Image (cartoon, rainbow, N blue to C red; front, top):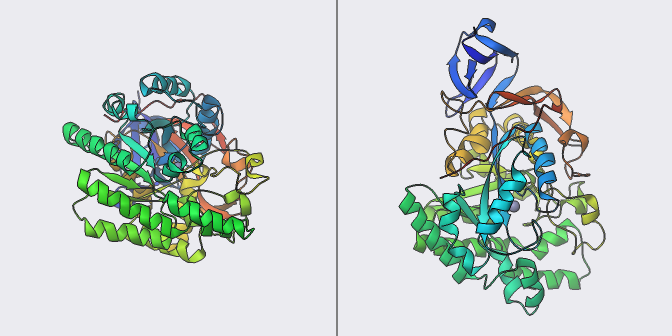
Length: 473
Ligand SMILES: [Zn+2]
């Protein structure tokens, strides 16, 4: 009998904090049981030869939106297929009540079990949820949600205008919420802080930082000039709005003692503000996040109108400031913010078109090509950004995010040499377009393993969905 269920031989493993090393890996019962220089094929019931490849810990894509625009279970299946194609083995997805998703409001005690049911058996990767309290009644459900394994929450700062504006009927229809303002934000922060202290773990609040009053003013101005397109959209939701929202958020989180995640910093100004507030409050727990699309796209890209997203795509200069912050460690996590939708939702009136698009299908290739190969990001840091750090900050480390004894045997085995063009088909998503089409990337996964099982190989998903829910409490 073999000592291990599986051995991965001859590969270059990228170990957290240590970087690349020639290592063989033994897997038993879905976990990493050996990391050694000299295992042999006889040691494993199954053998993967990773000669010439890099063996990375499976990516933990800590920002995605499963079910936001499409039927929930179908979206979980198709988009987790895209995830494993891009080397992601854990998705942490946002969920909220209101318009989109399940199109309803009500207690999470009723709705969250429905989300769990719709998720079961549909994911090809492991998954977990961040949840957004939307109504006053949801505040009293935060502790219950933590007990269900939800370890983090979210607030969309720009939804405030939807409930406060003169158009508030329409806004309330969208959010199905109560007074969604800074006072409400502070109450969420107080509760998350209290839960963090009581449970002795990081229970954080993720923030979409854009200021609604400024957006309203600037959108009116840009529309009055008759402008559309990505450049106009960027001016309509200017970086000033992100900077102000970050200021508001950190003043409150500092007072409340709440760990926060400043999501998808889109611009040089926003990331500079993020770095500044971290220095101002050195003892506060403030995580800065960047997305693939803000790193990879600018408003001149060929993706054009399909790349409409909040916060908007900015300039090449903004991209380079973001990459610098990714390289030097100011930005802790890189994510896809994956939200699958079809091209028809992007067509017609530019201002009414739905925001967002998918990207999890090339999380590792994007970071390895544009970061490691093009800009000198180290492999160790690349792995930290998309695997170890999100796992650490969202309560999954070292089960996830590490190549270490006892960690789940989640791997993305990639080929850094072979270059491939991004195509819609190659992303294995239900999305029928991609703003990234035609980009040439290296570092595509050859094999993706979830808890020792091959879930993606030779360009195709393998077997039945094996993903399970990860409780983060
Ligand atoms: Zn998002």
